[in-house]
Length: 575
Image 1 (cartoon, rainbow, N blue to C red):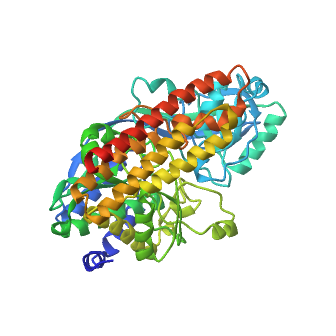
Image 2 (cartoon, rainbow, N blue to C red; image 1 turned 90 degrees about the horizontal axis):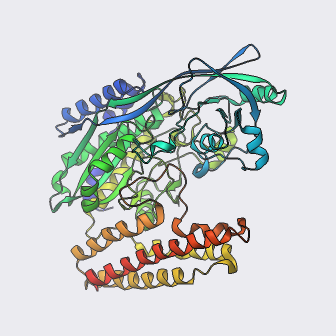
């Protein structure tokens, strides 16, 4: 860490961010009116420190859950409806069936709990209210709706019930998305109540679901701070996180809002020391609109982001109790070495990086922006096991996530102070780097491993050697490129153009299935998705495998064309 970085990090204090955390712990931020109140407070605190703030007011399509319950055998069972459940406040009665499933233990698939879709399952589910283990999330609800269920009950893995959202549509739907809106009601219940409902199902009993939902268009405030750099003010590091939360949402995401507040304060005071700019946004509509705020921003400012964003950094659930480690850390491969060095210097910790999930506010993959962080620090696995905690999607691993228990005790002042400095150094160093600190050789290494894995799975059914060769050729071009950058043969301006433009080509080919400037569903995207079918060829019979091979021919063409485009780009700008 150089003296400038050290001096700027020393200006971080905990008082202002902790004040915001304490304030947010006193009021819910679910309804847009309450979210706007929180936005107003952020703006007021920023302006108190002289920070210039622009407040956008987009109209977002949101689904606001109200009360829910399940009635069965003369008893009323507590429940929570996920956002985008269908409203059945007058009640929906049906026969209850139970389709068992193992609760997913990995964060990457916890929102996509599914069961095996057999003819037997379809016959059991059709026309029934079906229950299974899971968070009443998109995978579960969409699957059972497709099989003909009239309602879904998700059995949460513990004594708490977690709020969530059951649509796979990313952000406000467009005309093409609308058919994927859920058409059946869904609720979540806790594990003990789920067990009692299973007993009713096994006896062939009926249940009645009640859900109260409010859905429509809501004007939502969205603050933006733009801190101009001195040398390349048009280029910027993009830091962002959501302000709306379930209940008071201290660990998810008042601590993140406070982190961005302090970073905005410190960097504004030191804006004369920034090479590139820093852009910071607080999102509405994360919880009730499936990332509606960040998606609106991605749409509204797509061409500016495409031209000028050098990276995007998501800030969600930092500073939570017991969160001493940096594991399950979202990062794109090209950013890992950079991020690892930052965390080592600030926290003295090694990282365990992983592929970013189709979650958080990663609403910018289709633009093609190198990305790091989503969740940050978390508790050690051994501590989670000691406490009997299951996997959750935030709060540093605390199972208060998405419940009314996510209160002030979930935050930790000292850990928050450390995590603010982690985010600050990552943003500051990224903004001031002479050469953008992303190594695309790490990405081609990932690509080579992915192609090899798919080829092994495909066996003799499909040949991916052309993909392997294209990855190798790009890797060779990258090795020459970085060697020429190091020697000074390629000047910084040209190097940075190449590094940024490679993101526009390689991020979409690795993280998206739909065309650029559209948004994939909130479901897992496999690595190099255009050739991912190669890993599943053994599922097809002799007749249908021809269709899968046709898809792979087209997908391999898309992949190779992108890899060749990236190689040509290097040769044209830095050859």
